[in-house]
Amino acid sequence: MIEGMIADTIGITGYNGDVIHAYYAQPLTGGPIPGVVVLHHMPGWDEWSKEVVRKLAFHGYAAIAPHLFHRFGPGRWDDVTAAARAAGGPSDACVLGDTEGAMNFLRAQPASNGKVGVIGFCSGGRQAYMVACKIPSLNAAVDCWGGRVIAKPEDITPERPVSVIDMTKDMHCPLLGIFGNDDANPDVEQVNKTEAELKKHGKEYEFHRYDGAGHGFFATDRPGYRPEQAVDGWKRVFEFYAKHLAS
Image (cartoon, rainbow, N blue to C red; front, side, top):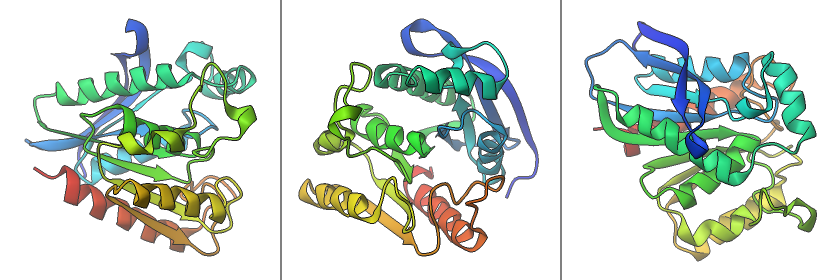
C-alpha cells in the first residue's frame, strides 16, 4: 500500500481533440507503475468515482477518471449528469476517444510501466467491455455490472450503433466481470449469455457473481452497498490487475 499520493482534476485531450476534465491520482513512488482508466457510472463523475481513483492509487496504480459527460456541461457534476441523461449520454465513439486519451496520458508519465487497464461501473461496465474489444493496446479490463452489454432493439441508436456483445470476437485483452445476482440490468440470464459468448470465442475471462448483491454494490454512498460482497469483489479486482498489469 502507498499512502502518499497526488490527486487533482486535470485536463486531457480526448475525442476529436477536445480537452476534457479528468480526475487523476498518482502514488508517490519511483515506479515503474501500471495505470488504470476509471469509467464512471451513469450517476456521473461523482464523489464515489473519485474515491475509486484514489483507492487505486493507494494500491499502487496511477489512475484517471475522464469526465465522460464533460461536453454536456459546464456546471456541477450532478447538473451535468442530468443533462447527459436527458440527451442519451455520450456516443460510443466519444467514449472510445476519451478512453484512448486517458490511456495516452497514463503511458506518457515518467513512472509508467507501459501497461494500462480499465475498470467501469454500470454504463461504464458496458463501456469497459467495449473498450476491451476496440482498443488493442489495452492490457486488462474489468466490467462491474455493465448494463446493456446485450442491447435490446430500442437500445441501438446512431450514437451506439452496435450491440457490445457482438464485438466479443474482437476482444484483445483479459476480462474480469463482477456481478450481483439480484441485479436486474444485467440480470443472471444476461450474464450467462455474455459468458457463453466469451467461451464461444475462446476469450480469457473470469466472472464472479455475488448472492445478496444488486446493482452498484461497491458504491459506499448508495443504498445498494454490500460491504461483504464489495470487499471480496475488490480483492478479485486487485488480484486480476496484479496478474495482468504488473511489470
